[in-house]
Length: 288
Image (tube, rainbow, N blue to C red; front, side, top):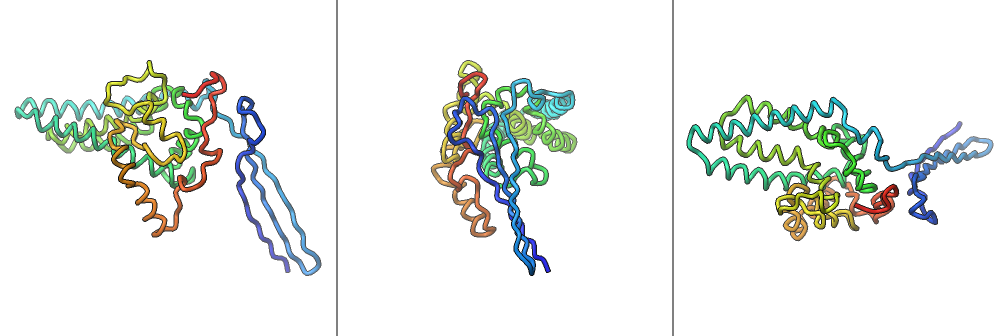
């Protein structure tokens, strides 16, 4: 009679004693231990699987826009324009100006909060196999490793995933409602969410490329999110909610609730390792 036991232990990337300027590829090792027990004698086998992970190059196809990406961004912008038009035309027709404007401001404020909650969730929970959002979780983990790559993504490549969500969400609202106040909120909220990844990219760009007018998240503020312990400044629209959420420890409280209820630990509780440590932009020899 034979009993086979198999356990897999993913190890951290091997980067010790390797100068950062030579880390074009990171070696990941997966060790598989198999033990077989028989009535005659035990046997053991050790299998080591190596795989290399590299930051995407500037001409990497994964950073380029496709026509599918562009079509989704165009569809998202069309639904946003339709919602905004209904808000303006409805406001003019009913002589309402203040209410749609206030609704739009509420959409702007709540979009920042929404971006922070979503960013916190995918930074700390799930992996690439998570249904629906798995690819975004994987992308955000890679973003922590190589944050400068977001500045090299083409416009439609960076926005198409959110544009698809906005299209399917806002289009039914365009067809169902004509209220200028409703569309004042919807158009502004959806615009900020859809373009939040562009605001995010600007926050990683150079100072000259960031339209710093106090209405978008600043480079300095977002830079704090990419420093240990990687558990703050999650909001990426205006950043207005970051101080409130961080000082009140809202996300820490949510993490405790999820841990005691579901026994799931957030990634931010783990000691920061090389998976969360920013690598230098070797091609330009600087960080952004």
